[in-house]
Image (tube, rainbow, N blue to C red; front, side, top):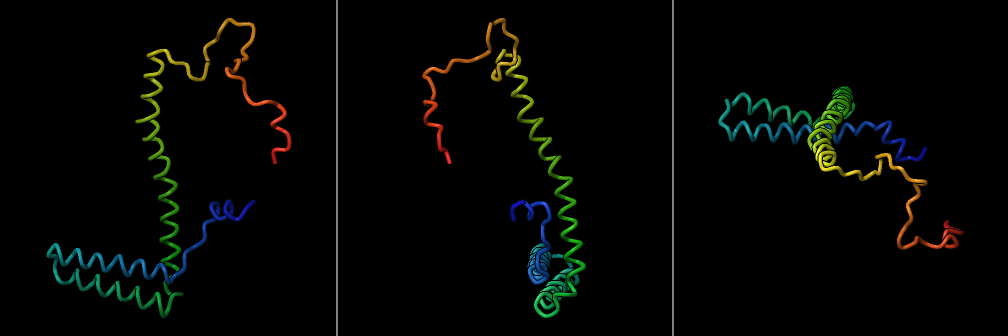
Length: 139
């Protein structure tokens, strides 16, 4: 198994420093939002204090953030398992199914699945494809 395949099956936990910086930015944006929307000062102060705690912990004590980082990572994996099938199902039933229904209504058979009474199902190419000799030593 190649490295890229292995990393997609077993994603690695991001560093605690990057986790701390992420939540520093998140709580700083929350403080700015609370200030902009005229929330009470306590919400603004709590957000600023939390952002500073994550900043300082990220730089000076990243080991303290490991449990939160693991929880956040597990939440992301869980959301990926739940949201991906839902989104793909919605796309399938909104895009693919109506197209398939329309193709059946108009009698299209792109895969040539309808039974035909012919002696052979071989389809002659016109013009003919490449010469068989061109397939030697492909690699």
